[in-house]
Length: 278
Image 1 (cartoon, rainbow, N blue to C red):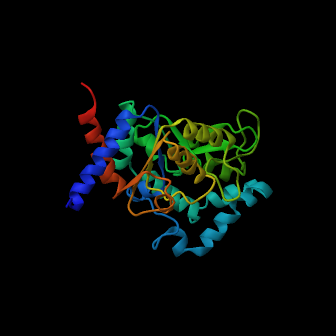
Image 2: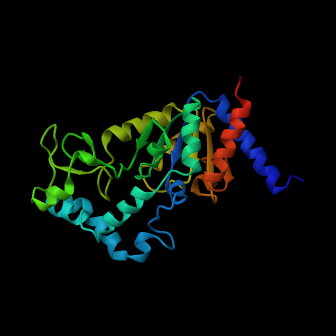
């Protein structure tokens, strides 16, 4: 009878084989890969909102505040004690873990064609991934609410603008009001990212789901789109998650490899290398 270690080795080998045979593999990532870099989650036992329910209520009001009073939106975000500022400082300090680096390596090997992530921490970029769709935006970017142009956070001296009473920042292209690129509650997913994510999900023949249970919509539609194609034998869906998820229970994924992404993904990369032609 095969032991747990043997089962893991078999699953790793299967994933590597599926990846090597794929023509257009993509990864879908969520909070599970980021918490391994020390970034706090929001709703877990020690989550930011679990400890501070008022912070969650403010987060739910954030987009409405932006629409009604963008100056107040920015003044709150730039306050030293605001949850947004506290979380941003944690994100700034975070570094990619072995899971992020493994996905970047798979892309460098031309096995993985891109990453679609729920995370706003920019860690995939820091790890070296190039083809990234940040579904919920990025903490290090700003976005014009009018024309959708994105800017690096450093393009605006927000603290100086606050001191001079020049908030909110204005778009350097169209003059529209600029907000954080991160998508707030009640805010539509930017149309370009939503469209490209759907296109990638319809194009891929393998989706590697890493560290997400995919229960937040509309992001959660993406693996289910691939899961429908999986049922017809067109695509493969592999989960790397610490525990079974709704994707496992609904039969969206072909199989799950249980464990931390920072431990499992490097093992998959090692096995892929052994299977690649010289």
